[in-house]
Length: 81
Image 1 (spheres, rainbow, N blue to C red):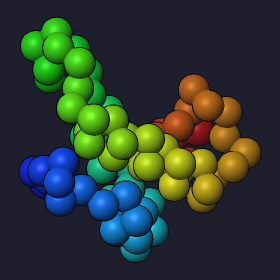
Image 2: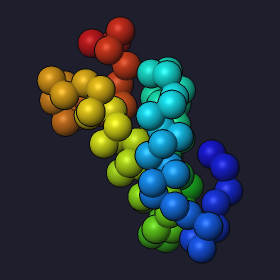
Image 3: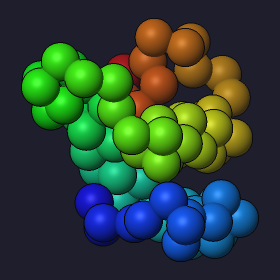
Image 4: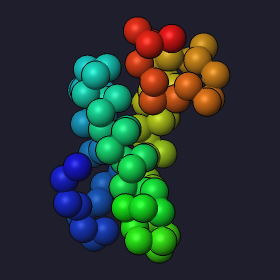
């Protein structure tokens, strides 16, 4: 994941970038975002807001592409279903 400062973070630019990704790229981005928001990656501290925004937007794009998947399967590639 790229290091993005809060002041530089633009949700619309992120959405555009996510829309341009193919499915495997989006999956990898979402998995990375999920990890970076985890307690392990943050040494027990809450994740930075821009990382939670990245995860939320990646999940939203995945849901847009695959609306019939149940929520627990978000960020799981369709080929694994």
